[in-house]
Length: 378
Image 1: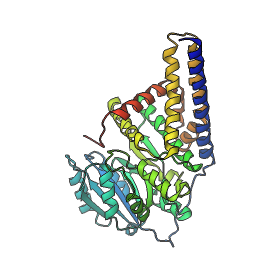
Image 2: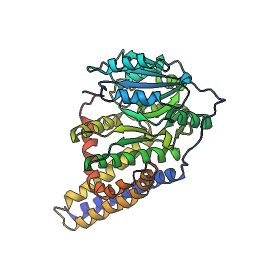
Image 3: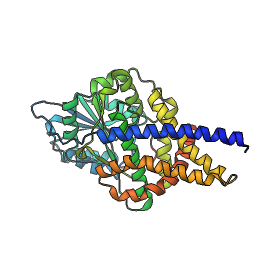
Image 4: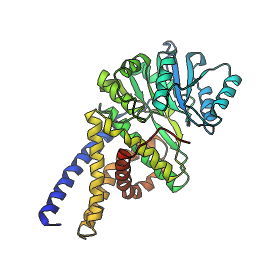
């Protein structure tokens, strides 16, 4: 590599690094300014809720979810549960039917999906919902007893068209699980921070809520139903386009936290992340696209330095410095979200994760963009 080419490479890396620092600093500022909510819902204001869940082959998880829905402090007469079974091949349907029979005091509807995939299932649930407010979660989640109550209270305070809420991976027993949890917490932190500064660029379909009529209105404008993933992100994108970023809020409340399982194997982990990445090429919101590009190219810059250092040993120091700089930039937002989620013990894995993260990001980004993915196969 000649000097001119090296200088050009370093200048490009410098610009990308500056963009990354600005991006993460803005998200960090947003998260630190976001106040944790403790509001109780106003019983004088009646909000009726439909909880929508798409399920496929969830016999190991669905019973725990149903029990956590049954244990909600929110009045049972004010919410219904709609489960859309996406052609399960296990005992999922029978478990739901047994639960419905044993718990007649809660309104649970079981529907067979008319289409294929999570996106079609959620849409079917939306059209079959009797109530004006929709809350969505996944079939492998466990909910806080005040989950519905906390979301409704926040809606009463803000009247936001869409509410995003925290998701925590669990358990975190071994090193693989701990790294998963920490990496996912960084995404939740960015979700919260970006929404707080009016720049919502991420969400998680395991924990979000919105007005039914607003969702029906934007569904008519969506053009992503042929894409297998992205039931959450494309909806967010359309909500922002139709109602503006001020109508998208993040609920920072421990009562609103949803817990979902970590991946059992590295193969499952990468398949999941590839599904998440695969939808990126179809985004139209410039904020989402720009953020994704900045993160990707910054991590690609670190990898470029790593491999270039084998030919130009002087670059080893620059590679290490850039990785440490990334750690320093990421540390405040990670510290904040781990404190909120009571996961402080995971921070000792933050620095090792920084050395692994660039390789993981680039690999999943490239493979996710070019490999064909589907919602779920079990």
